[in-house]
Amino acid sequence: MPRLDIAADGFRLDDRPFRIISGALHYFRVHPEQWADRLHKARLMGLNTIDTYVPWNLHSPRRGEFRLDAGLDLPRFLDTAAAEGLHVLLRPGPYICAEWEGGGLPAWLLAEDGIELRSRDPRFLRAVDRYIGELLPPLLPYLGTRGGPVLAVQLENEYGAYGSDTAYLADLAGLLRQHGVDVPLFTCDQPTDLERGSLGGVLRTANFGSRVESGLAELRKHQPDGPLMCAEFWIGWFDRWGGKHTTRGAEESAADLDRLLAADASVNIYMFHGGTNFGFTNGANDKGTYRPTVTSYDYDAPLDESGDPTAKYTAFRDVIAKYGPVPDEPVPAPAPKLARGPVALTDCASLLDQADALGEAVQADRPLTMEQLGQSFGFVLYEAGLPDQGPAVLHAAGVRDRAQVYVDGQPVGVLERESHEQALAFLVPRPGAELTVLVENQGRVNYGPGIHDRKGLVGRITVNGHEPAEWRSRALPLEHLDALDFSPFDPASPPVGPAFHRGYAEIGRPADTFLALDGWTKGHAWINGFALGRYWSRGAQGTLYVPAPVLRPGRNEITVLELHACATRTVELRDRPDLGETEE
Image (tube, rainbow, N blue to C red; front, side, top):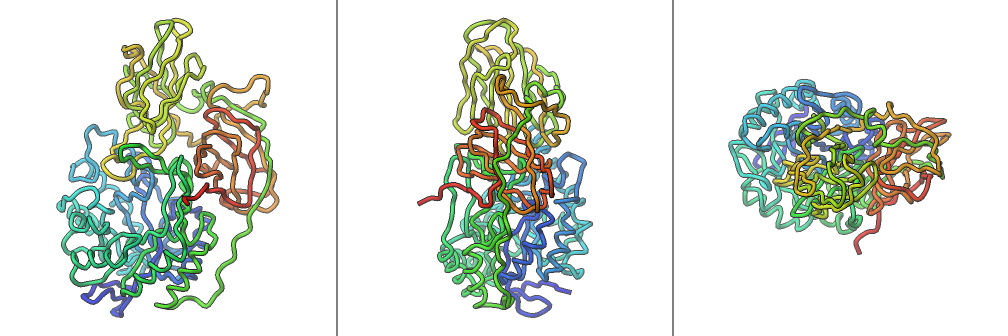
C-alpha cells in the first residue's frame, strides 16, 4: 500500500525516503485515447508521479448534473496512470486557475446575484460540498491509503494570491476529510503569498519558474521542517490572442531543474504536457485589460501539444537521471503526422438565418446574461426593435466579451471588451428595423478578483439614450450542429454575417494533424463533430491541433464557423503546427 507520509526530514513512501518527481498533465486537455501514450512518455522521462487538476465546470456543466464519462472519465485516467507505474497528485480545486475557463468554477454559480466565489459565502460552500460529495466516492479506491496511486490532494489553489481567509481553507479541508480523503493535503502558493495561502497542519509548497534558491528559502522560512517542494515549476508559459508565442530555452529550464533537485527538493514540472483548450474552454486574464488565452496549451513543455518529445524532454531526462532511476529505453520518436489539402468547404449555413435551430429565444425587458439563460460557453444572440429611422448611437456599458452588431441583418460594427469599446454609431434604415447583437464569450477570467465574470450584455444598453423596451435573448452554446440546414455555397450570393461552412476530407490512415485556416478571419472549427477550438487571424496561433482519434478512414466532415468573412473557400490539414512568432 503506497502510503505517503510527511516527516521532519522529507517525504516517506512506505516508510522509505521518497522524492516526488512529477509532471503536470491535465486529462481534460488530452483526448482520452491518447492518455496512455502521454503517461508512458512521462515515465520514460524519469517521472514517478503525474499531477492533474480537476475542472469542476466540465464535470458539472449544469447545476444538479455530474459527469465522469468519455474524456472526463477520471477513474479511467487514474487506472491508466497506475498501470504505467505512476503515482498521482490530485488537485480538485474547487478553483484551479490553469488558464482554464473561469478557473474551473462552473458558470451557473454566477446566476446567483452577489455570490462571493472562493469564500465562506454559504451558497458557494454548499455548492462545493455537493461537488466534492459527487466527485470523491468513485475516487476513494484510488487513494494511496487504499492501495491506489493518489499520494496527496491539493487544498484550493494559489489562494494566497486571492485572499487570506484561513477559515475558508479550514472549511474546505474539513469537506475533503468529511468526504473520505485520508491522504496528506497540501497548499501551493507563489513565495510572496505563502503566509496568506497556508493552513496550519497542511503541507506548504511553492510555485516558481526561476530564482530557485530564493523560492526554496522563502518556503523554508514559512515551513522550518518537512519536505521542500515546488508544486508548479514553470518551464514555459501560455499565449494570448494578439501576442507572441512564449518559449523558454531547454538549457535554462534544465539548469533550474538541476538546482531544484540538487537542493533535495521535490518537484512538479508545470507543464509536462500542456495539451489543448478544445472547444470553448480557454480562460482569460484581466489586469485592467481583458486578454483571452489561445486554443493551444502547448506551454513549450517537454511534450509538445501533439505529444512529441521536445529538446526539453531530453534535457530534463538527463537531469533527472543524475538524481534517480530513468528507464533504459530510447526517447520516443515523434508520431506520424497527416498532410491533406486543400479541402474545399462547399456548403454553408447562415447563423442569423438559422438561429431558431440553434437556440430558443427568451423575451424580457432587458438583455439576459449567459448565466441567467443557464448557459456556460458559446454565444448569446440578442434582438430588439429600433423605433426611429436615422442616425443612432448604441451604448453598451458591459460587453462580455465581443459583440458583432447588425441592423436588419447588415453588419454595422464590432464592440470589443479587450479594446474598452462601448459605443457604436450607425444609420437606422427604417422605423422598426431589427437590432441584432451577437456576443461571444471569449473565456471567463481565470485569475484574480475578475473571476466573477458574467457573460453577454451585462450592463445598461441604450440607443440614442433610450433603452429598448423588449429584448429577445437566445443562448447559442453550439454543443450540437445537427439541426443546421446547409446548402451549396453560391459565389453570386455569399452569406452576410456569421456563417457555418462545411466540407469533407478523404483520409486513408488517421494520424495527428493541424488544421490551417489561412484566409479566414475569426471563429471556431469542428471535425466529425469534435470541437477543435477557436481560430483568429490576429494570432499568435495559426493552426488548430487535430488528435488522430478524432479522424476516421474515409470521409471526414470539417465545419467552420466564420464570424466575419473569408478570402478563400478552402482549409488545409498540415503535418506541422504554427503557434506563431516567438519573442526575441
